[in-house]
Amino acid sequence: MHVSEQPSGRRPESDWERKRRLAEVFGDTLPETTSDERDDADRADRAGREAGNDQWLRAQVPPHHGRTG
Image (cartoon, rainbow, N blue to C red; front, side, top):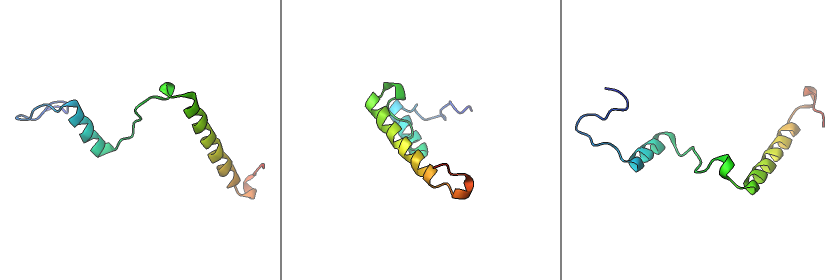
C-alpha cells in the first residue's frame, strides 16, 4: 500500500477533513495569504518590528565582542 492510498473499507477524506487532520498534527503554520498578497502597511509594520528586534539584539552584544554602538 502506498501513502496516498486509502485502506480498504474507508471512504476518501474530504478536503476539510484532510486539512483538519493535518492541522491537528502540524498546527496551523501556513498563513492564509502570501507576502505578495498583503498590504504595504503590513510590510512596513513587520519591517518596523524587525528593525526594533535588530536594535535590541545589537544592544545585547557584550563590549568584549566589538560592539560598535
